[in-house]
Image (cartoon, rainbow, N blue to C red; front, side, top):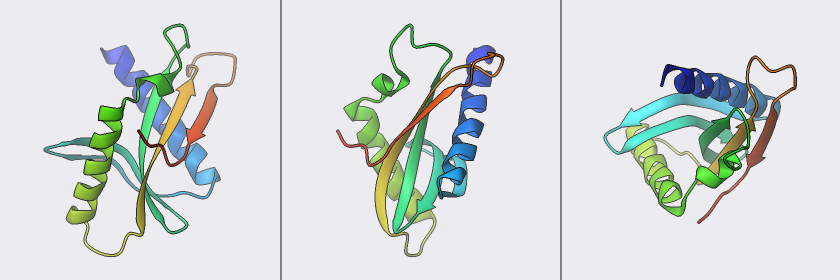
Amino acid sequence: MAKKDDVGRWGEQLAVEHLQRRGYEVVDRNWRCPQGEIDIVAKRADALVVVEVKTRSTSAFGHPFEAVTPAKLARLNRLGFAWCAAHPGWHGRLRVDVVAIVGSETSAVAPSVTVFEGVRA
């Protein structure tokens, strides 16, 4: 489990750096409430973005995006509203993005980072 956690932390940091280069303003990370956790909360243009990060060292068991089910998307939307309730103020429209990363920190090959914006079930 520790190796999986390390891969996840590495992937989340890589995702933050990638999103910032694309103009996202990261406002929260690993936010938790009784309903679950949001990996990254960011703002971009007029939207508050709930970002789910999925990292795999290889695509042997499928692309990371495939792990984002309709149930997961529904939970991420609920978590976005919970985050807004916990942080009063105008946040703009709410959207869910997914960052899919394939690679590893120790690989000689650069990881593949793909951002899927406005993901819906």
